[in-house]
Image (cartoon, rainbow, N blue to C red; front, side, top):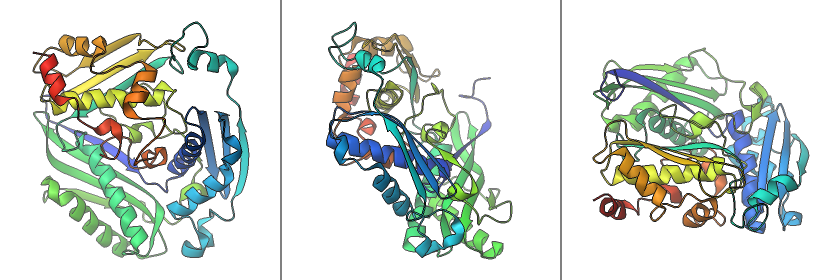
Length: 398
């Protein structure tokens, strides 16, 4: 039976800004932000590795203002902002912004790739996709953010815990943490939260205190959903101790949390990571644009759920295919919605057009580094979350 109508439990997880992989994502996107500020036409493919008191950046960058970009300083500023500061949390964390060894292995972009991506080069005169592949966008009306409930709730929990940590309202919290929320669905709609898991790095504090404090936070954050019940189970630091964490507890790498970054396992994923990539990489920009289109379709009331797949060939501007699935919830046929998207009048999936439509080369009021923790979707500060095509979509499908 389809998950749309069956009764089932679905679980998603999130990880905090202090998680080792997220440390790396934020450094990579911090370098991207600096490159785009120096040269909006920068091409960036930056990966970061973090381990015990060690950070390395590698990848390909072409930036006319590269001399003004300081990757090491960016890395240290990001790590300090996250909270890995031995002066505040002690040397025992094994990772601090002012002591880690930094290695810079960044170099120029391959000219073979550049000729297919740069406008006016290669076989085509229009900017082509930065790589082949397929990307997905998804939206659902089960939350106000038009996001799946399990991942949205998981992000909200960790975002609130980060604010509490910075405010020192719970003084023993440290930067690394994970959350997991299980939601029971009935007829395709969230009916109850069955389980909440929070694993949070702390100083040496009695487990009973940690559990009491964090369960109270969970109830404060998720209580307004109306989905907590007397049967909801809470697991806080279930191993019994979480003191060693961050890059000292486990190595981190850019792009290793792609399901956390997107929809928590709901829908499909093309496999490409986001962080450290400039908008010419359709792994990132087309996934943002597909979310933009899917969210507008759901916001327009044309479907309760919508997934869009778009596929590209490297160096070619026109998508190879666009596919729409509303899981049987559409008020019009999937084929009709697909026709509207393929027409290009409302949503133009060519790389240069979607970059222009979302303002991806010159972020205003947001940064790529902001996307690198607590999800790339479901937050109104990002331009792909706007629902400015609702009326036009309604008219287009009449």
